[in-house]
Image (cartoon, rainbow, N blue to C red):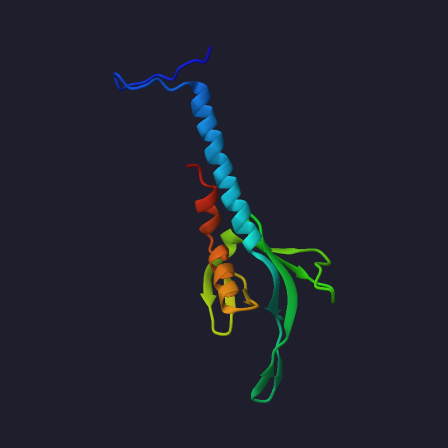
Length: 148
């Protein structure tokens, strides 16, 4: 026989511990499903602005490097890709806690501003840029992962 939780409202139906446990598990599953959906939306190939630009007088040449990008619970990751656009090499992670500001630029570009340096990425299109910039916001994961 299931135990009942104490109920402070007279006449209200009794709630069993098993019902409360089922409700908590259901809520946890919804949170995990939401998190999985958010993480899966933040995967794909972007371009990353190389660190050093070549200066030629008043002109400057920049180099965009293709990278596989994806979100994890604690950070935004990127890694080199092969000519077949498959991830290769060791991934690098920018922790959400280290991101001070996110700036969306024109042409599907966004900048992750950290204390020690900035990371500039170019998404495939404006919509993807907005999704990536929002996902990199240091608060998005905490909102999804926080207890209900």
